[in-house]
Amino acid sequence: MREVLNALLYIAASGCAWRLLPKCFPPVSTVQRYFYAWRNAGLLEAMNTVLVMNLREIEGREASPSAGVIDSQSVKTTESGGPCGYDAGKKVKGRKRHILTDTCGFLIFILVHTADIQDRDGAVDVLKAGRRRFPWLRHVFADGGYAGDKLRDAIAGSGQWTIEIIKRSDKANGFKVLPRRWVVERTFAWLGRCRRLAKDWETTIASSAAWATIASIRMLTRRTARYCYAW
Image (cartoon, rainbow, N blue to C red; front, top):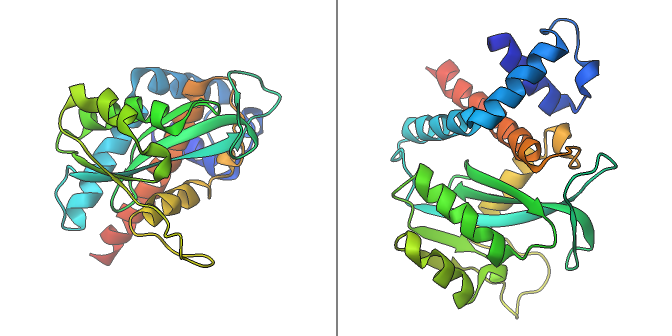
């Protein structure tokens, strides 16, 4: 199992095609079989959740976060096909990676959908899934794309939520780091270190979300290992 996971981490980091997997790893057919089995069973999300809780405790925090940050990233798709849409605001034809992180930037949940779905519409499923994994999650920081009563009304049935909109000041000149919102942007940068995520190469949305989750697992395990070596 360890070698299969290492193979998946290698593919995520290098961005290589399945059949270019080096011979030092298990056969491609074996790695693919476990990838699809783990993806369909939700095992990758479970691994990510356990790693987030463990790392938060190592850093002296409660295992379950009470606040999070939500944002989306539009990415281009390729000729592999599958669902896609056009994001008129970003002028990107492809899909959106909609993520929810804690205030440390650790991935809580990711939902991939077509790029033509508005942020406030896609956020409903993201927040509900985040609450299922971390029941104490209550407060969410977001940008202006999530403003309005539509989102608040849609999630009202899943518990108490506080959506805090962080907006850029109209008087601000040039680049300015916005409080809390920079955390989720840093998470996108962390995930972007894996070349598999440079574009959305996947035919299915489920595989697209799975590879982003593997990239998060890679980041969390490396960060956890640094604490272990420090001890």
